[in-house]
Picture 1: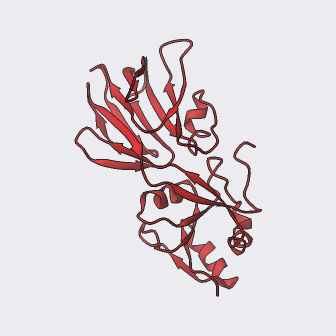
Picture 2: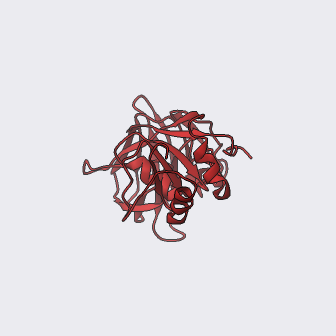
Length: 237
């Protein structure tokens, strides 16, 4: 057998890799194996690996366009090719909440009103400037990996891997809203009106509510190294 490979998100794939002669350690109860290589199946699995301690080489499988993902049917062949791989590096966002708690996001961070047809007002700022203030249902701050997802559906561009983020208002009151591509480190988002309940979502998981005049700040965490093999798909097709 070769190098021990962790598998997160698909026990059946772990069995298939064992049948192909790979040494496999499967995650359990949401735990990420402490192996040098991890196969992460699906977007949730990739995000779970990003939040965990350690610095494994991650092979994304069936994980969408945000990373150069391998189709599920090609995963066994892709693992056998990990010895001859190119590496892409993706940032992880460290999100500091108003109470000082820190959470991590791989895809995106979203502030959004909890009730339909309610809007609030938001400010986006960097350490040097106030970038914009607008009324909207919310705002999404997406990494390059997250940029093909919800941020793109609300009008943001798709980014190549970098330490920049797409910032896009959600259903803005303005008819011609701005979208921004900004360095991740030092970004903040705050709520400027006490008119609606605003929820903070970290990679689509509801974290907590953000009150009037509260803000979240973003810095860079430990990046994720993803493997690019012959079976990896383009992020732009």
